[in-house]
Image (cartoon, rainbow over all chains, first blue to last red; front, side, top):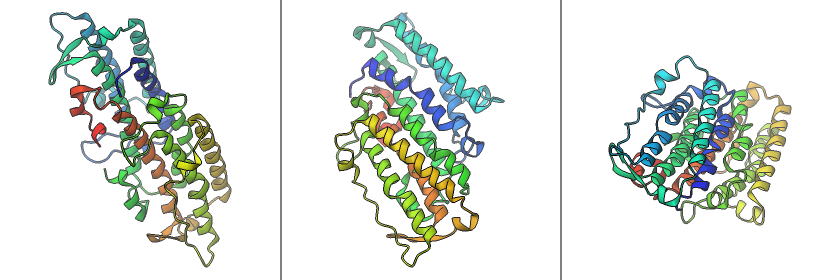
Length: 174
Length: 174
């Protein structure tokens, strides 16, 4: 499936309501457990998504669109949420994410990107040259990956509780 | 994490709104593509969840609670949705699922299950003896597994569009 801006936006504009439906008001038994050492709970994942809204997608798109002499992206901090989310409730994080996502989608809409602009490039610190459409498709895929991760982290909490059905539910062992 | 009825219900009562947030009104580009031969699209998955509401969870719980001489479950038809969903729109399926889930949760609540009842057993056609709490924990885990699957199926549609980011997004190759 090729990237089309309107179809990509249709997915990322839903993510705040998906996260709220999955996690809003849910007990910490579900939202603060992870998959073991060095893994993330749903609470941590929402903080990670917030950090992306603040520092990644739109900032990188701006670097590409400016087409300056230095188009190199700032490396992404995958651990920022451990201090940025400290002391906050999950419901507060869900609100913060929804608000940032709404602002970012408004910026994106205002750009009225053309097909030519979607092929402009920036420099990823590791991959080298990447296009704006690849960046925006990654924004969509990154959301979906973390939605799947949240469902998996929650499912794993019942790995033992489901007894023999574990054989039919590979998600608890992934 | 041990199974607690209230915590399990807190997850499965959210699933209709999670599915609606993810899929309601979304184009068939997203909802009708799958992962290849013998795999399921989001549309097919929602039909599968509907079939579970009609024939699986509550029906099996009733067999267990009745404690009759024959406590063997009817095998689950994993392909029923291919004819049952035929000709329906995804939005109609989402409504149907929400309605059935609401009815089933009302039945479950009316039972006011005790800790002793949660340890009663039925006979799974393949696994043999299983408890009511294992069945109910599986209902929860099964929902979460299919939510993760829907996100994965959608993410995979951008496997090519994300370019080199594929290296960072294992969900598109799972």
